[in-house]
Length: 339
Ligand code: P6P
Image (cartoon, rainbow, N blue to C red; front, side, top):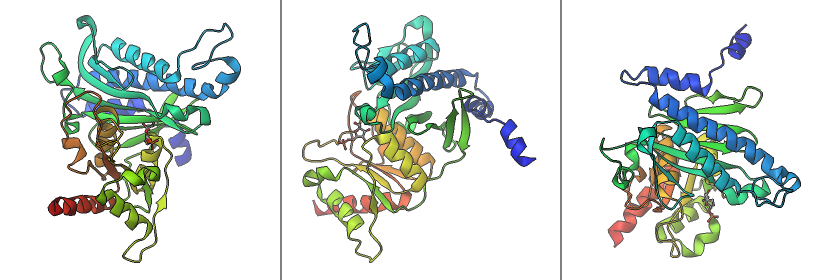
C-alpha cells in the first residue's frame, strides 16, 4: 500500500513551492510564478542539451543546419529562452546573465519586484564531450521601489531570497533553496514534471574528496598549496583524500552536496580573483551550501558577505563540508598573521 501511496502522491516542484510559499503570510504567488518560469526554461534547455549530441546529424543548436544556416550556440539559445521566460513572467525588473555584458532592465509594463542573476549554461564548453553542464541562478528582491538601477543588483549574497541550479546530466536534476533548506527534484520526462527526489539535502560534515584543477598548482598561494598537500599527504596519518574534478561547476558542486568534501577554485598568480563569477556562480552555490549545513569561503571572508562592485566580478571560492572548509579557513587565517 505504502508504495502505491508514494506513486500517486506526486510532489512536483510546483506543488512544493506553493506549499512553501503558503507559509509566508504576505506571499501573493509572485515568487511561485517566477519560479515556474525558471523551471520552464530549464525544461527547454534540458531538451535542447539532450538533442545536442544529435546536432552533428540533424544540424541543431551550435551547428549549421541543412539549410546551411548557422544555428545559435546552445548557451546563446539557452540565454534567449531564459531572458524571454523571465521577462514574460511579469515578476522581474532586472536580469543579469553570464551571456550579457549589460544587465537587462525590464520595461515598466512587464516589471515585477525580483532580480534574477543567472548563468544559463555553465560549463557549456563540455557539451561536445557529453559532460554534465547546468543552469545556475539566484533571486534578489529589488531594493528600492523607484526606478531600478544597477545598485539594486550589487547586493551581498546573503540578501538572496532563493538560489538553485539545474544539472543536465544522466538525469535532469533541479536543486533549490528558498531559505529553509535545500531540496532536489528530478525531471520525469514522461510527465514533463520535476518530482521531489532529494528532500532536505544536508552536506556531510566532513568529506573524503577534494575537487580542484591541479593544473593550476604552480600558481597557487601558500594556504591553498598547503591545504592540497594535506589532502594528498595527511600529517595526522589519516588516509589521503580522493581527487574528483569534472571541470563543470554544477557537476562538481552537486557531487559535493551528496557525497561531501570540498570544491576549490582558488586565486592564483594569473587570476588574482580566481575564475568563478560572484553573482551567478559563487553566490548561488554558496547560498545553497550554507542552507545544506556547509560553508563557503573566499580566502578572505564568508562568501555571502562579499559586496560585489561589478556585474561580472570574480572571486576565489572554497565551499563544501563544514569541517573541510574550516581547515582551509585556518590556513588562510594563519597566513594573515604571518603578513
Ligand atoms: P577550469 C566551466 O568553464 C567553468 O566556468 C565552471 O563550470 C568550472 O568549475 C570551471 O569553469 C572550470 O575551470 O579552469 O578548471 O577549466
